[in-house]
Length: 267
Figure (cartoon, rainbow, N blue to C red):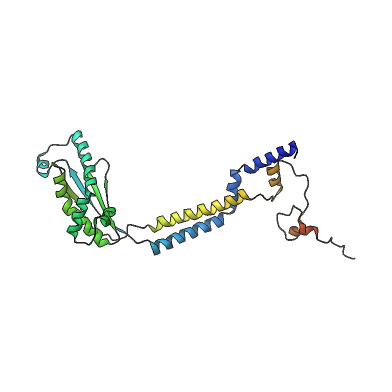
C-alpha cells in the first residue's frame, strides 16, 4: 500500500467516526411514528405489570407537635426565644428518630393485637419533620388498610408517654389523628405509565441511533461527498428501481445490468 492510499484510508476512518448530531436528530424525526408507538407500548406494558404484579398499598398517618417543656410547664411558660425554638426543632428531629425505633414499634404491635413482628412493621413506618416547625408527620404504609390504621393508632397511644420518659422535660401532643385510608397510596398508575413510556422511547431511539451509526451503506450523492470528501460528477441510473418509481435510483445494480435493452416499437 502506498503512502497516499494510507492517508486516504486514515481520512476515511476519521470521517466514519465523526457523528453528525444534526443528522441523528433528523433520522429520529423520520422515525417519530415508530418511536411514539414503542413508547405507547412501553406505557401499556407498565400498566399491565402494575395491575398484575404489584400489590396496592395504603397509608395511614398522623401529625404530632413536640414541645421542649412538659405539659405543666408549658401552661405557664413565656414566649419562646430563638434559642428555645432551635432547641425545640432539634428535639423534634430526635423524636422523629425515636418513633421509628424498635421499642416503640414493638410496643405498638403488642397494643394493636396484630400478628406482626418488628421486621414486618419497621420498613412500613416513616417520619418527616416539617421545615422550621416542631411538627412530626408519621406515616404507616401497608397492603392492608385496616392494619395500617391500627398500627398508627397504637403508635399514637404509646409514643407520647414513652418519648416523655426517654427525653425528660419534653412532651408531644397529637395534632391530627389517623383515619382509615380510602384510596391506595401506591403504586401510581400514571407514574408507572410515564416510566414505561420513557423506557420505550429511549429504547426505540437507541435502536434507531445505533442502526444509523453502524450503517455504512451509501444511499445518496450527499453520503458519498460526506464520507469521502469528493464531488460526484456523474451517476448511473438504477433502471430497476426507476421502473418502480423509487427515490434511490442513482446507482448501478447487478440486476439492472442484466436487463435487455429496450427495442424500438415497429411502426
